[in-house]
Image (cartoon, rainbow, N blue to C red; front, side, top):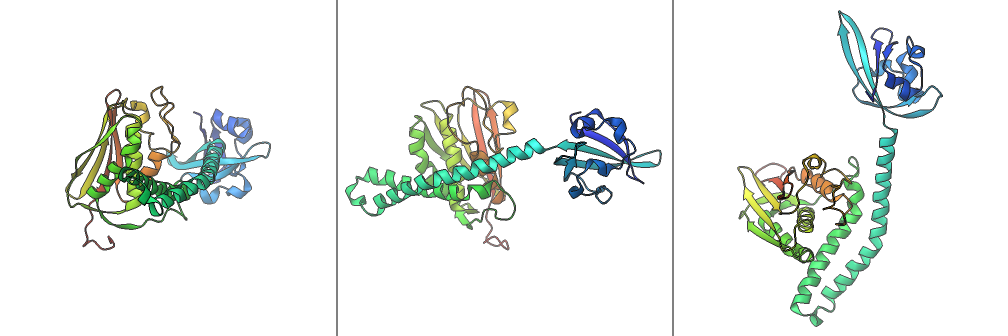
Length: 336
């Protein structure tokens, strides 16, 4: 096992056995640990063990034989053999994992800072076009400019809040939750994202939309989810292909599905596509751009809407992403 495992007595908490990984993690010889209190392996700031033996998955600091401290995850379970109670502790050195998390947070903070200034200029220029000199534009130019202005403002909002998206807990994203008709939002999303799909020679089509179905969401954030799903589907569709959007009503919910006929996602990658920074590593996906944050943000938002997002995909056949949201009931307390 790569994890360290040690057993220690329930009465005096002294170590009775260790596996080889304990010696590798902590630097002790196995014989030197036998008979020592379990607190020998813990930094003094991480607790002395006796008060922690009933707790699962403790995030502590370990102490190596040379006195250095490191991030340690410890899981403790109780066991009993022939009425002789003892504990089994499993140790994981999470120093590298925590460092990767820190680097991710730092990357997001830098990304937010670097994107903010140019985006502010883009938003300002597009707003000036739509409000100040729109009379000098053709109808088609006006339409395209208005689409650009709307989407740039949504992107600015995303940039301002992206750090909160990826850090759960206090300071998490505040949503403007209201009842909205799902069909209207989906239609607008398809219309707004067609110019992006045009870059790949792909058409966005709304096959069906359930009428008069209301959902309780933040409208801009749901538009953001739809934009991510539609642009992803277009990006990975073959030229001349079609991305199909369906809205179907269930007993107490509504499902929005976005389907493409692209290369699909390998089975071994499907369970990770909603993870932060994860990108499918294949020749068909390289060069497509993206930070690996889009689907993870979609998942976080949909879950805040009390919904679910799932994915079905077959290699060489295409991918369907489904967003299921509870139907809004105006009579439900706290729903509006």
